[in-house]
Image 1 (tube, one colour):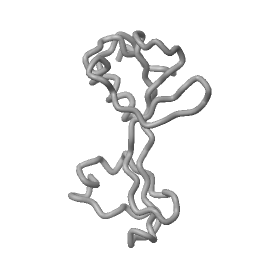
Image 2 (cartoon, rainbow, N blue to C red; image 1 turned 90 degrees about the horizontal axis):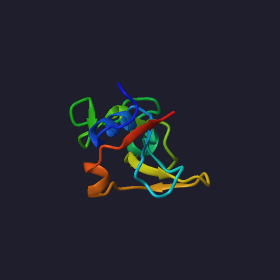
Image 3 (tube, rainbow, N blue to C red; image 1 turned 180 degrees about the vertical axis):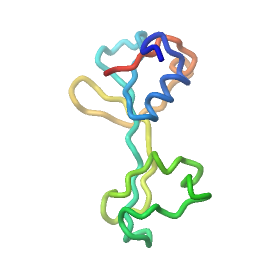
Image 4 (cartoon, rainbow, N blue to C red; image 1 turned 30 degrees about the horizontal axis):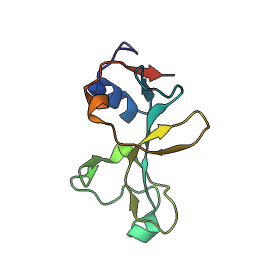
Length: 112
């Protein structure tokens, strides 16, 4: 797969597989989107650590792939959902929701 001039679907697929992506059209240089995996803390939710958490069909938690979760989540939390995040050049990051322009753009690229 090419790593630049991607559409949002290709960028999102890469992000979900653990890669980082950014748009050429973003004003802030050094920004990139990534997936913060969800987490599950076993004892609180009633299952052992490293055990697959309760799922809808053995493959999802509320429709989200089990592969998007870690089973070593923060203590005293049951399920923390995965989220898209935006990383800033300062080393900080926060939750991010793509805009309509982001989703329709074809200037996405994978950041190595």
